[in-house]
Image 1 (cartoon, rainbow, N blue to C red):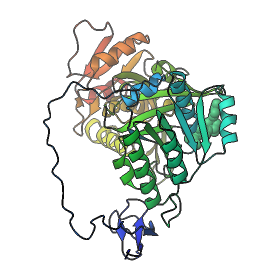
Image 2: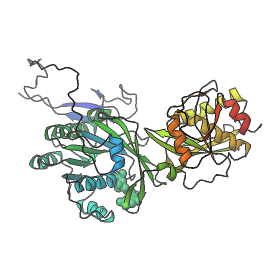
Image 3: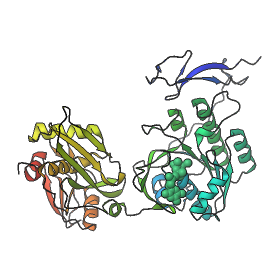
Length: 458
Ligand code: TYD
Ligand code: MG
């Protein structure tokens, strides 16, 4: 006799299950995330209750057989860069991003460019009707692209369609939260639905060799919605970021089983959809006001690519008991640390000041080497004197105030030189290829030296 389905409460944040409803998830500590879901009973004979007799598997060595994973170049240079040279057939990718950031646009363009290379691409839209997708394709000038389209949310129907069409190279599901499997008694978008749908689609991808591209929603704070389980299940997790007030969009690999995760792809949202940006520094420095105090150019590196970006600071006397600290595109804790170091090690106190810090262009910077540029921007705003417009800055600042070496020095300096900068303020330590650049160097070993030259007391 088949067992009845088991009801349990599943946390919509972490996927942890609990027998009773509780306000706080026992696994991840989030509040109000438990939802009742009925898991399907284990299929008879699946051996859930009784250990089944196993079958011995062949053990292999680690030695490579010279077979790199085959890649499908997508015809989109930025996507190829982020995925490590193209999408691997039979792999599953998850792409997350805020609503309206341009995921559907990117994927439609990707399907079209892949289809133009002779690949068969299928686009299942669960959020928009086929007519809406067609309308977007028309706006993008892609009406003639040989992309196959369906508006469907039923997982069984999608799998049946895919089963009949065995020649697909890329399947896009937009989005995984809209799918529902009729075997499950839970609403679309709940953990068990998302998990079941992802599992079936990944299984199809592995069997058929088609790459599976899933769109995932994100929550308010930018996490991929649904269980972390889905991130574990797929081979690659990409995040599509940007500020809706700015045209720039960044595609970032968060996880990649077939390549590095430090490369970014840069796009610009224009009238005709997303445009690839191959020289992002020029774009991010485009509308710079070099004479304003409080702006410093940071010579950064994303993956293997140098990226120059302006960091802007505004320091103003505060009328509040607890002065304001607001950050866009940088880590708030990092700013607090920097302010503490400026106070304790350099004698520059901002305790009576509101501090605003902004990375221009809607970019998010995670590199610690941005510390020195942020410090220079803060000091310049405090003193009211603009920094020299032909200077770039980079270097990590430690709690002692020491300026620590940053990687890829030569790459950063070469890019700065290419864009016409004359001097770089850099850490005293760190290797530099001899004769690589003609840019003038100012080497610092302690933040105090910078505070003395640009700070309020210079
Ligand atoms: P969309 O791809 O629908 O976002 P998502 O799928 O991530 O929710 O993108 C929607 C936004 O993109 C919309 O607000 C308008 C903008 N957009 C353009 O600026 N130009 C275009 O050519 C297109 C198609 C969209
Ligand atoms: Mg969409």
